[in-house]
Length: 173
Image 1 (cartoon, rainbow, N blue to C red):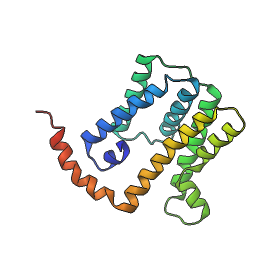
Image 2: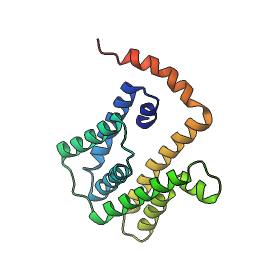
Image 3: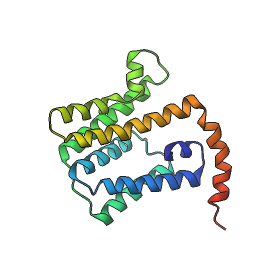
């Protein structure tokens, strides 16, 4: 929601949703070294590829880090952080490279499957508790489902219309 509303230039909704998501991600960084590594790896991968390119996304990252620091940041597993960051970068680069193309590889990269498969492999190898892989997959598949809903069900026009209401609802007198 934060990414979509930012792209649609619904600023207040974008900032609000990024702040909420950032707070939740910050809390995850305090749960365990695995959660901390997964969240930070995603953030690092997005930063390296230039995907944190809107004010609301930068604000969300700031809220995540601030929340983690306030609540007691847990030092991440370095190998897992590096693995997640590497495959997040690979997913983003290949997603962009195959955007608009057809075929098996284009479909594979359109859903950013490198990191998903890596998380499954790491869990199968018992290097990561299965719960963390399942949690990551649930998060990532929800992101994919949102994208599919927006593109196929035409939610964007509705959200653009909603943008006028959010400006009214969140206006500062």
